[in-house]
Amino acid sequence: MKFVDEATIEVIAGKGGNGASSFRREKFIPKGGPDGGDGGRGGSVIAVADRNINTLVDYRFARKHVARNGENGRGSDQYGAGADDVTLRMPVGTVIYDADTNEQLFDLDKHGETVVLAKGGDGGLGNLHFKSSVNRAPRQFTYGKEGEQRRLRLELKVLADVGLLGMPNAGKSTLISKISNARPKVADYPFTTLHPNLGVVRTSPSKSFVVADIPGLIEGAAEGAGLGHLFLRHLSRTRVLLHLVDLSTMNPDEDRIDVAVNEMQAIENELRKYDAELYAKPRWLVLNKFDMIQDAEQARDDFIARSQWQGPVYCISALTGEGTQQLIYDLQEMLDRTKAAEQREQDIADGTAEFDDPRFDPNRNG
Image (cartoon, rainbow, N blue to C red; front, side, top):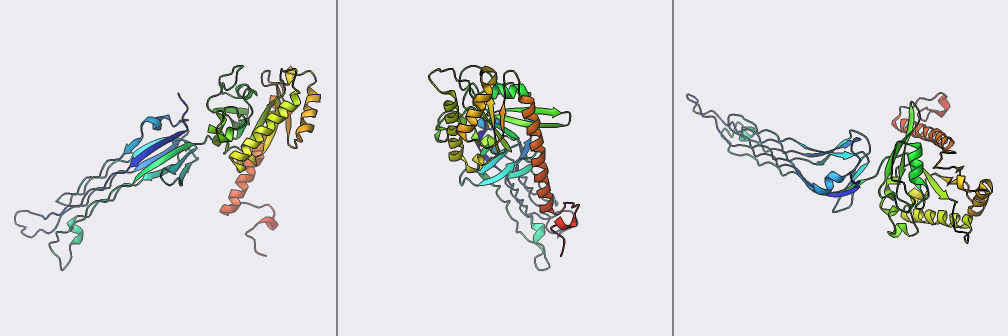
C-alpha cells in the first residue's frame, strides 16, 4: 500500500428536515388542533482514530464526504427520522486543519478518539409547538437548519517513541530491520527509503517501544532538497532522536572523521532551520559500521573531540547487530523514566497525584 501522509477533503453535513404544519382531521373531532411533527436531524460527519490504519491513502481519492438530510416532519404527530452519521476512520496521529484558515482543529492522538468534523443541522419545529391559549390553530413551522460544510487538510504525524536521523546510506533501514519487526528496503545506494517506516522494538515480554525511520536528510533539506524534509514532521512526536553517523568512508583522499563531522553538523543545521522544538529534542549519537573500521576506538575519540559532542555515544554495527542490544535497553530505560515523569506531571495537573511525603504535595496548606 502506498504511504500517503497528506490529503485535502471536503465534508458536508446533512440539512435538518423541515417541521410540518398540519391539523388533526378525524370524524367527530372537528377541531382536533395542530399535529405537525418536527423534522429530523441531519447527519454529521465524524472522524475516528483507528490504530489499524497507517496511511491517508483512502482520502487521496475520496475527497468529498456528504451526510444525508433529515426527513421532514409529517402530520399525526409524526417526527421525521434523523439521518445516519458518516464515520471516517483515520490513522492515529492525524492532525486536522481548516484548509482555508490553516487553523488546527483536532489532533487524533489516541485510538478510538472521536471528533465531529461537520455537525448536522437541527430539524425544524412542527406547528404543534406553537399552540397556545391565544393561538389555537397555529400555522407556523420552522425550516430545518443547514449542516456545516468545511474544507479540511489532513496531515499524518506518525506516533513513535524514537526517531532515526542520518544521511542517506547511514544504515538507518538496516538498524530498524535488525532491532524491530520492520522490514524496509535495504540497498547499497542512496534514498532506498522513500517513506517512513515504523517498527516495534520489544525489550521484554511486557515492554516495547516504537521506532520511526524517515528518508535520509541532505544539506538543504529544510528548503526542499532530497526527500527527508517531506517527512520531518513524523519526528515531532518522538521523545528521543538517534543520529546515525557512518564513519566508513572509502575515499582515501578524504579524512573520514572530518567528512562525518561535516555531515552531522549539516543535519543539525537542517533540524534547526526546520523546527526549533525538533532540534531541541534529546539526541543520541550512534556511530555505525564500526565493524568496517580497524582503529574503531581511536575513530570514536577523534570524532567526539572534533565535533565537541556532549551527549550519549554508542558504537554499533547495524549489519551484524553488535552494540545494538545495549542501545535498545538504554532507550527503554530512558523512555520508561520519561513516560513516568510525564504521567506524574499529568496527575499533579489533574489533582490525582499521590504524595509519599506531604511536604511535596502542592495542594497542602501551610
